[in-house]
Image 1 (spheres, rainbow, N blue to C red):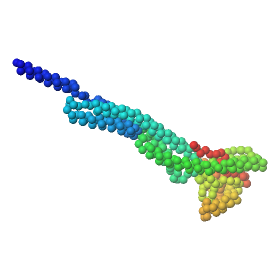
Image 2: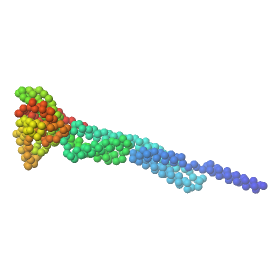
Image 3: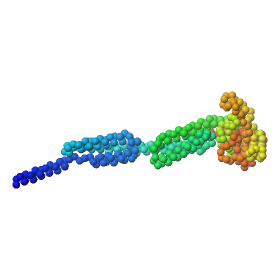
Image 4: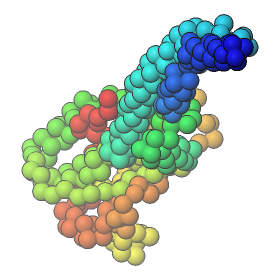
Length: 364
């Protein structure tokens, strides 16, 4: 009987010791590790590896350390295990993962704003080619670059709006380079063109004063504004829109350059219907003596080829209204406008052709 009770007592003691062991068994850091994984996943979604690389790296490092420490402890006897180190590593991982997520969110926003500002700046530059730079002659390569730049700008703007920023930096650099090249060309061209504005103003003021003094008619063509003005006795009578040579900017250098000349001319001959391939025309005395002198000097300086010819048959004529610069150097008006000025412009009427009378804007 005593033996039975002894066995029961020993059994109870063993059970008690086992239960005590389980009670004292250290709890694994499962909750902490699960939370660390959750925080890492959120940080990864925020692209922390891109925008918060340092914090993201530390968060992953501490998580890996927590897992390694936990695995090492599990190899030990249960009553010898301790998970304090693993738990501390997990907490550090959580801390840096949260930090990485915040930094990534801020970094992403900053980068997105940077992309948006750069696209806005490029858009502003492209807009100049619808305004200040619209009338500048450009080569086929430049026109192609302008068209492709407009398309790429729209594509990148749409991508950014959708949050697709992959290769955005690379594409922006290419776009900025192309548009920058066009803007530099436009600014330099207009800057050089604008240097003569003071001289052109003096020409026009003197010509208007001469018209007033002599009571004669006067034709003034402003190339940049695409305007032809008729004066009589120094008073402005009317203004008409014109189209010019396809390569209008600058002074005419030689035959075939498709540039409308600049200078003092006169109407050499009036050509009615049947006397010109256009609706009506005023033949100008290009090349005059000043043109011939400059042409000879340009040849001597190698500015134009020795084989070049000076050109002729520069007219103010009809058949205009196409909306583009298309002539070989002449000045084109709509036929109805030619009818209006036909009565006002006799032979020998002075014709003054200038580049501009106001400084063309070169943008920012």
